[in-house]
Image 1 (cartoon, helix red, strand yellow):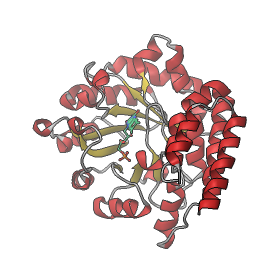
Image 2 (cartoon, rainbow, N blue to C red; image 1 turned 90 degrees about the vertical axis):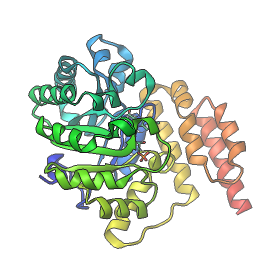
Image 3 (tube, rainbow, N blue to C red; image 1 turned 120 degrees about the vertical axis):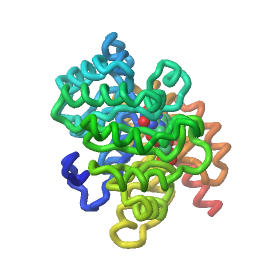
Image 4 (cartoon, rainbow, N blue to C red; image 1 turned 120 degrees about the horizontal axis):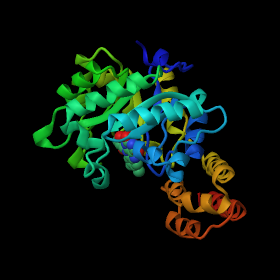
Amino acid sequence: MKLKNLFQLKSVCDIPVFLAPMAGVTDYAFREICRRQGADMTYSEMISAKGLKYNSKRTFELADVHGDEKIAIQLFGRDPQDIGYAITLLEDKQGENVRCFDINMGCPAPKIVNNGEGAALMKEPLLAAKIVEKAKKSTALPITVKFRKGFDAFDCNYLQFARIIQQAGADAITIHGRLRDQFYSGKADWKCIEEVKSILHIPVIANGDVFSPEDARQIQKQTGADGIMVARGATGNPFLFRQIKQYLQTGSYSKIDLTEKAETMLLQAELCSAVKGEQRAMRELRKHMAWYLKGIRKAAVWKQQALGLTSIGELKELIKQVVISSTLLG
Ligand SMILES: Cc1cc2nc3c(=O)[nH]c(=O)nc-3n(C[C@H](O)[C@H](O)[C@H](O)COP(=O)(O)O)c2cc1C
């Protein structure tokens, strides 16, 4: 089945482009910004199935959806029952706003892996399959799995793992072409994505090192993947989605000017503030501001000032100074 149809996307492009799940990054405000820039589907931050079971307020907050967004909710956990419970609960709560549930089997963080969750599940393919089977029984929505090339050089089992996940009933998979022990270092291996694509009949989403429209075209061409997922390339640059779409359709794309960057940064702050309150939003937005400011003249100075911001008013003032200074300095 085509990815577009699986997720009921209205994309004009045949190859949908997704905003990846990123803990601490893909909150509502950033998802909404990326959606407005053309992301066909956006993912929540990873959400602990156990946290939902134990009624953690913070965990529930991560699963909050707003307005008319329709997102992929990503869950992590190693207990099939917990995953099933989380899916039933969240579908009940916000079914209308959920396009699919994704299971995280690629997170490399020690605090996750040491609990046997995330990428650790690549070492337990049979348990991984049970999780997918339980997830499938818990909802009629699509179930997808995101995993890596393998755990380490000794456990580089992406082909076997992909087959098992498909066999267990997953509707699509995303593969990030790195081993767990590489974390985010080195270069993503797109060849393994190509190999997985060639053996599966369910859609495959390619992930890893897409930082430009040219990268997007190249990863699609090389792997034959059905969709493209972007993570770090979108931080401070949500315009990448629009540029990728433009490039895939026309072979060229327009550059982004500072004014649009400034307006987008402000809009993200306003969206974030509306949901989380101004003070918390300004704290959480610091890293986003640093990403937006990357490459701008005097970026180090502006970043330092951004650290002290406590209100949208102060942010507006800072943005005004950045724009004036950059215009004057050229
Ligand atoms: C800050 C950060 C947080 C991330 N959090 C998650 C997460 O919650 N779930 C997940 O599956 N992957 C997570 N990832 C991995 C990304 O989704 C993606 O697989 C990886 O960054 C490779 O894609 P990229 O080269 O486009 O960045 C995270 C990555 C980063 C940089």
